[in-house]
Length: 237
Image (tube, rainbow, N blue to C red):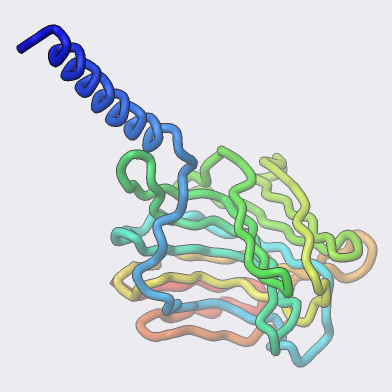
């Protein structure tokens, strides 16, 4: 082979190596993105405060025990508190933790704290901290309307504030409060789910315990209703 063609071959090889390396760098350093659930169906077990038919309040708080269930590839499992902004339009803002699959070279399952809203501007979900909810730990989640179209969120372990932030919504009506376990497939076993000390914002610094509730669950999930402000959920698998 002549020197001319040797140089062409070397350049071709170098170009191929460059493309391969660039591709690897892309996958290594590209932002982590959610692997979408295989089904848009969702299954729920939890409490509405009043089903949208009673007094409205501008804040919700609750303690949620963290579980680490088996979550099949591309599926999700979340536990959260929520303020409904519009029942008719299905607008809401919620705070909790979620098991979900992400890409980092290869797909893997992780768990994150999250805050999410759905309003007239669409849906937005964020992971506001690199800290992870630890298995069998109980965290206090607090969501509060603090301004026009502004909801503040807080997560504590015992009395220690882990993180806080603000998310904006339009509208900012508060038509109901919710606390639920949610899965994308019924093979996820939610035994051990436990919500405690559910509270609503009343006036000033007062956060009374829920004094009413409307239970809801999808088969094969069930509730152990331990009062207006506490429940356990189980089933699935």
